[in-house]
Amino acid sequence: MYKGLHIKVCALSKYGKYTMLEDSLKFLACPICHGRLDVEVNVIMGDDVIEGLLRCLSCGRVYRIRDGIADFLTHEILNEVDREVMFAYDKTALKYDILMTYVFPLLSLGIEPFERFMWVRELGLRRGSVVLDVATGTGRNLGFLARVVGKGGLIFGLDISWNALLVAKRRARSLGNVVLMRCNASYLPFRDEVFDGVMHVGGINTFGEKSRALNEMVRVAKHGGRIVIVDEGLKPSKRNTLVGRFLLRLNALYASLPPVKELPKGTTNLKVVWKVVPFFPYYVMVFQKR
Image 1 (cartoon, rainbow, N blue to C red):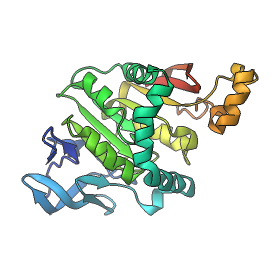
Image 2: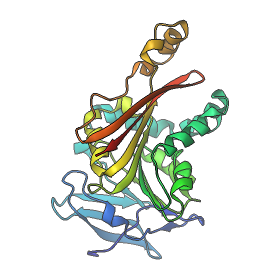
Image 3: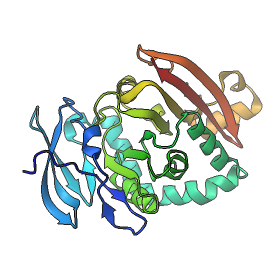
């Protein structure tokens, strides 16, 4: 057991080599009891931990590190709803990434990448910030976040789908300051109040434990940190229009509402904006931790 070792989990350098980000263990905690973690190294490449175990010093639970990615997803925190989502994205991760990277920007008339940049701006980050991308998927937010926080910042990207993370790992290769891990968004493997901002795009409408996920995002954000949530949804006043009825038949998730009622105490400055990228309606919900 290498007690006190500071592990950097799955950050990738511009050379494509797994590297270890200094002191990243100080951000991590057991997703169940929030106890501190120790690391047992099985395979090292240079100074990099490729295979190993993370062990909670409080409850004794053990989490694997494989291919440089810490896996915090266990059966006890995976309900049936989230399990179905995980299987769906594991099956379609590569096709989904091609669709969202090449097809969707064309269908949105080139607007979607600009909108994604604007979502990142809502976080109010600066150079050197530490930010969390919840449900990072194939990592399409990572480049936008990296431009804002710079090389001195740090980006944690997590997802429930292992195959989506493998795609995200390739996307993160040139950034050098991205930490990827698998976990359930409703059980975040982080200590309290460690992130300058928290971002989530596309997923909360189908979360099995939506209220718990929001509580977790608030828990890990610093006081004053902004949280930005984006997902499908058509503005209620537009739903009885001809176009609105067509869109709702096209995708039932467009009937989703921002999870305002599920927001925990201790949040402020709530703002909800309804937008439409051609034929793709969505909401942007922004709030702060007090």
